[in-house]
Amino acid sequence: MFIEIDPSQPQPLFEQVSLQIKFSIAAGTVRVNEMIPSVRDLAQQLAINPNTVARAYRLLQDEEILIPRRGIGLVVAENAQTACQKLRKEFFKQRFQDFLEDAQRSRLSKEELDEIIKR
Image (cartoon, rainbow, N blue to C red; front, side, top):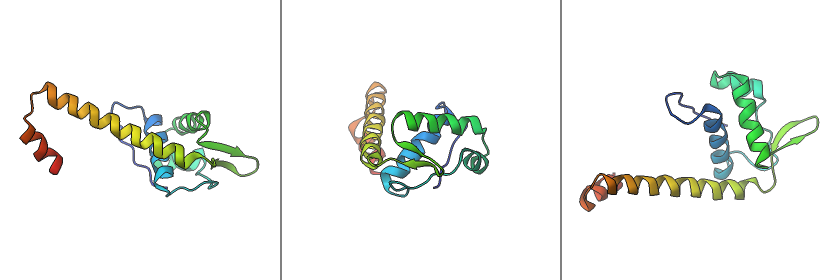
C-alpha cells in the first residue's frame, strides 16, 4: 500500500492517511480481508507520529472500513470497496463543484475554463 502525505496541506495528517487508504481500497490495490500495516509500521514508513496513524485507523474502524481480526490485526471489511468507491466519487464530485464555484466567482471565461480542463 502506497500512501503519500503532504504536511503543507491544511487537511490534518490523520485525515490524509485515512483518505488515501480509502482510495487504495476503492481502486482495489488493497483488497477485502487483506491485512493493513500495523500502526508502528505505517508510522515509520510515513515518518509521522504513531498516534496520527492510530487516529486514522480508529476513524476507518468507526466508518466500518476496517475491522479488527483477533490475532491478525486490522483487515479491510467485506463491504469496504463499494463504500470507498462511493466516497471517492463524492469526494471528487465535491472538489470539482468547489472548483467550478471558485472559477465562477473569479469570473473565469468559459474558454479559459475549457482550456484548464483540457490540460
